[in-house]
Length: 468
Image (cartoon, rainbow, N blue to C red; front, side, top):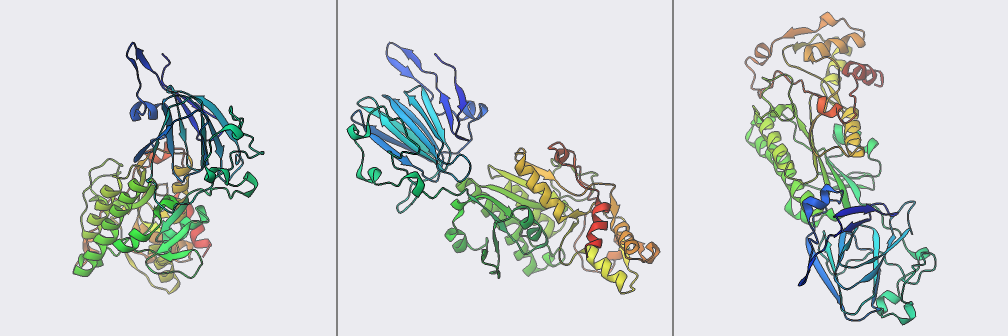
């Protein structure tokens, strides 16, 4: 009896699985699909949702080459086949062929975009396949002619003697096939500071916000609207970056703001997490140090959530919801600075206008520039970092908001002494403001362990101001 094993092939992602057959006088038994054992050996955890079986009465039946837009796990329940697979995806391996004879001891994992075909070598062969999406009427996908001379599949039984459907006889040759494009990336909330930065690291991504944009690939998608969510083609995406959020911390304490914050920061991420599980895309969601009460320093990824105000509570709820998605990253960040209005730009403007502000000096953390947050996102995806929560900010020594303001004033030609430090308690006195965490410093060791080294926050600040 052979050991369970997984073998690679010349087609990227196409894997051959050797299945042990437990035989005795009665016949045999096999574990045709065993998630824990097979994924441990490198098989993707592809999440099958449908099991189909094709019974082939006679030797010579030939089916394919079909390129359905989902992953398959094919095997033989009884009998024997000659299997052929052709890479139909965009890229250097387009047209690459792999073949193997398969009996019940052989299974093959077929990734999306690889054409699948087989020829029956024994009467009464039963062919089984698991897929991770449901077949639906009207679905179109690339197909390849079984007799294509470029690929030149070496069929054991001549096609002239085989039994082939009229549909399979009429499929196009390779030169006429449009390769299958990879699944796309979607940026939700592309008009915000972070959404704008993400577009540089994810060029060509589809862009959506609550209202339509001016560019051709900008559309509107309100993730809190069930009708819009139901109509969106989620199967087209491999990656969704959720940069949308309600960030008006003080307004979230009002009745209207409270409802909006819960819908945007908790309800929408919960919807995206459900869709990520259903449609097998990776979900990246951006969170905040506000999910903590600021009494621990530094904050680690596994620290229990302890949000203070309404905004903080909605962000914590969003973190919990996104963690239910099978393939997710929660990037928890602090003091975000990017394009548009933000604390640094406000201090820069005050410096230019001759104003001498009072700034809190007991709220301590690190700036996170959106370019750095986007770079970290790209890095985690490119290196295949384990799914989960990661703290992300710029590096360097922690600073207070007053420290940052003083640095901005100095870089703008003003004296650091023109900024007056004040405690949060004194600054908030008599004002109707939401509570803030005092300690926002995050432990970056988990992020660094993936090979990412955050840029020093003060270095990034100097460049940010120099760039205007």
